[in-house]
Length: 148
Image 1 (cartoon, rainbow, N blue to C red):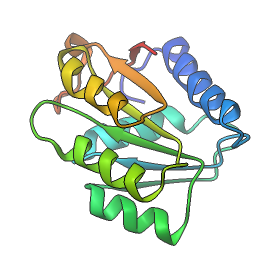
Image 2: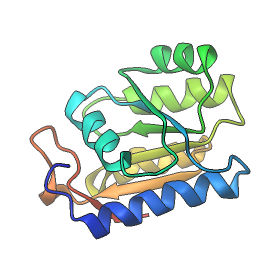
Image 3: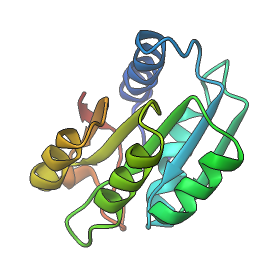
């Protein structure tokens, strides 16, 4: 992991697990990450690796690839990166939930991205991981979850 505090990453993993259990999906075995920043997606995948039930994590860069990947093989959890640099995450949420309204979607972003994160909830995201901007990696992403 990239400088992740293990306790903080453990809290994030616990949140992911609880959201899936609350939605009746059982343990998290498959995750689909959508983020246009490779470093951000890699950080999320690394944070999830210690989940004992996790079998597969897949990464895509935009909403169209997300919908295609989910159609080929539905997953337990979809993580979508949202940031203010563009609207790739917001569009991905709209596409995903428009075509798969029962999918479990969580959004991930920083405190600085409060507006697009709030918009994500307006279209149906079920969970949120917020990352502290001053702990960000060079791509503007996580060192660890701050709020969930």
